[in-house]
Image (tube, rainbow, N blue to C red; front, side):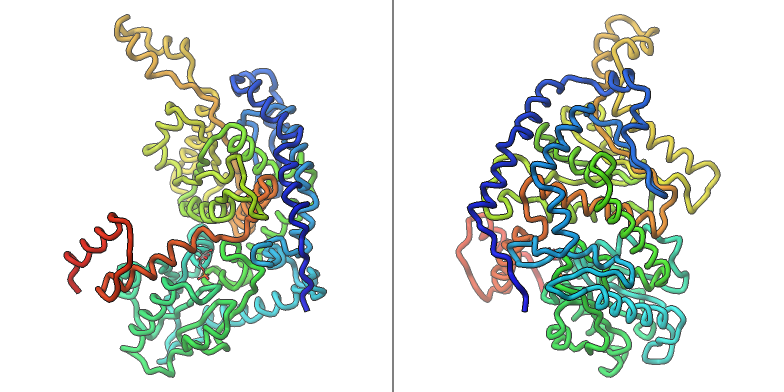
Length: 559
Ligand code: F6P
């Protein structure tokens, strides 16, 4: 029987107020005011050791945070804030399976998914690791069978195409990993992802497929997400044009925590791979939700992905704050968000395979920390989670970097770049890396008046007045650089786990429950009200814009 910890709300609310009313918080505000005109270029000029002092190396990964608007004092104050927020205790609670997702009364144990077999992680006096390993064992058997051709379709042919039907965390994680690890993918198996309820995605995907050789994974933690269930129903309808009902068992598997709903949908629980309520959707790629990746890259490589994340977990739980990558990432984010009031954070992977990583981190971060009240419902009167956005480099240089270099906003950026490519094409990888490094340098140092004037030495005087301000670069735009030795299952696991922990630490500092997502519910409720109205079967009171749009649909839509 689960023992629920009922917190004394008066105590915890005051505790959060203690953080933002603490001397550490006030000192950071004062420090920001005192240092906001400081230029990073000068910090680099004063300290040739800045890179080695402000970077952390782990096997396969270098994290350079030297190009940030921070001094030793800034970091000291940020670490003090982390102490005041009780970060060490929260890290222990996370690791030890306390029910830190208070609004849903759940533990948050995605780290247990990547523990090695034989490790222990207790939840309500029970070690969860054997259950995790048991599901992994079933996934290994299943994925090996599909890959080696012993699991066949209803006509005895091997599976050539896998379609993952899921959305949000049941889509983005495996999608990003499958794309990033494309060089490890079996050439015999194509992996497709369908998430959108817009029929064109499923229709276009199915158009190129053969029912005899296609495997569908219906991936939904709740097994109640309409988008996914509609796509799964469409896939089944399509499949049954070519095969009999009995064939479903060889072509549809489910990944879910909801066995009853899986059964009701018509998928045999024998073909279901489970996970647990203590795995948040956006933290679930390490669970059975990773099945498309296991099928694509093989189970051994998937274990490496888990091992990379575990390595980062160990680093997070044991390294001192001063050398702790996720803690530093998080505190720098707090510095800009809360104290500089920077509203956004950009993620730029200089790796084509990682091009969807910004979308993945967008869900991870914004669904976790896009909150305006604290863990216990208290109103927060400071800025919390930033808008996360980004695009692959170098394409983004030709799109939005203008604003980063010469716009009016402070935009902290993360650059992610592998030192080695899986695809050596002449010297192109060096060109890619040169661009990445150059952008971080340009954003940091800017271009001064005397440098521009030197460039304009042959230009007539009146033209100089016009051109000079336009060619100036203020610089001082902060960035972190993650240099991976190569994008491998291990380094990718490390990188993704680092972002998870960053989000957790920020949630702790801001006093947020990073593991619920009530904000996505309201729109879903209204959509289910509007749906019958679009068939003229109901009519509800709306504002005149929404009513007008519904009327317009009824006038212009033809079934
Ligand atoms: O958008 C809300 C959300 O609940 C996400 O948190 C989740 O990842 C996604 O929907 C999909 O949910 P499910 O896996 O239950 O279908």
